[in-house]
Image (cartoon, rainbow, N blue to C red; front, side):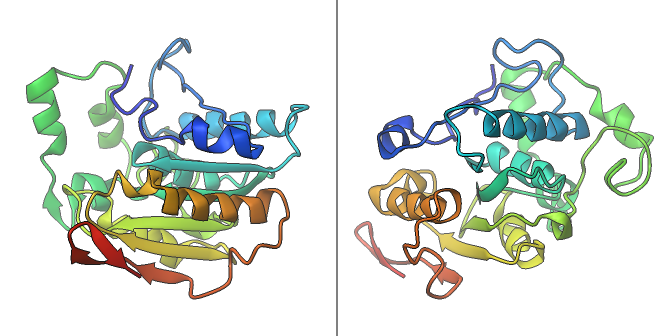
Length: 248
């Protein structure tokens, strides 16, 4: 029962009528899924890998799966995509960190007090004792880089091969700005895009303008529609002019 549980996933109203099936996965310990919630763990990444491969085998799927999500649902995409699930054909991480140490805990080298504020407001989070786990492991990914453990501190972006569209915020409360661009720059994907947006950051991804572009991206990679979704410059930035208006 997380505050970001489904808020930052796609709006089914915009996608189902266009021939898409939307799968929202409650990981272990979330919603009615049994188990313990292990945020940003290797087990969590493997579970999302399995979810993608499960979806690809269903009769309502053409074997091509895409992922889309904001913040937490972008961060988990990076962790999952480095495992290279065969059926992952396109991914859109929107405002997502991929290095929990540099982009989340010590953003730009300065301690981020976001978690402290949450705990003071809502109480201690229940679940895995990440402090004790982190103290026994170096700040690199267990199993993915060498040491044993279950904590994903940073994604190995070079292992991401699926076509990627990273959406980066111009301003954000302490997280996601740096890593959204890092995801684009260092991802091993042959085909990738970066869009930099400002203003009402959590509103634009659900706007008619953005939804149409995201759908064209997935139509291209999941349905094989030659619609020119990858034409044009790979990087574009929103320039705000006031009164809620902008140009690219």
